[in-house]
Image (cartoon, helix red, strand yellow):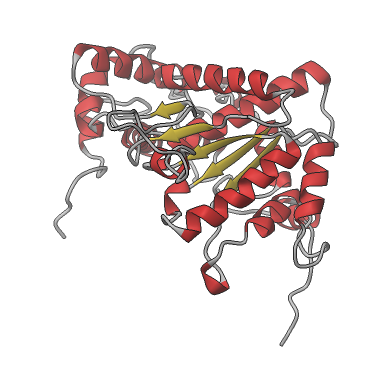
Length: 348
């Protein structure tokens, strides 16, 4: 069998991201420490129109303005402000504890911004530390993972997932857990983000997973944030406690704070919150014929089309902005929104 050549993250980045490499836009993966740091360091500010190709110039798919409008930057919603405060308080409370730490749970339906919320919180922590103490490559304040797939025997290789993120894969034998804990402890890891927690199956899968993650937390002092649909029913330690009897009418839930995401409803509070979010997108649009408030005025239309889901809202605004650039309209109108296929059935 041919052995796959070993190549480090830095060499790989030089290979694919060198100055002479032309490539189409690609997602921003955060699956390794190198990629996570690149994400943290990336400037998310919208481009200045004065620095962009002039009006009337043909727009290409790799035009910086076009690429920016493909996803835009996360808007600071009330949910983000709340999540940042909750996680910050938990980090403060856990900072000096060698045991008895609490994690944070993020749960909600698909399309309500759970993963974006979790990554924003992690990025916010790292940026604050860099601003306060200066950039230090020996500090790894955040580890960001997704639940790994099941391997042989139906178990998940959590040690491999941690080792891969930290760049320790392949150099520490079959079980690098001790080295993982050493690196995280001495590099002052404060926060571990676990996405896709809903992939875990009740029973042995959950039991084995949390036996490992709790060991990592105990040995490193890190605070864990768990994210996924119905994640509270999977993560909550009280539900996994089979030794303590419960009173008949006792609340079954434990002590982990839970951040519950949801779509924004059509009551007045939901409409007001939705409008504020659209207004934040409005501020970031960089279209030549856009005037402040144009997109905000379309909030009722966007609310109905997106059904209050942030994923759908983001897709509608980003696709509309890109279509406006390609068509030369350079502004988002209700007529343009009506041409988009998001949530629509197309008979072909």
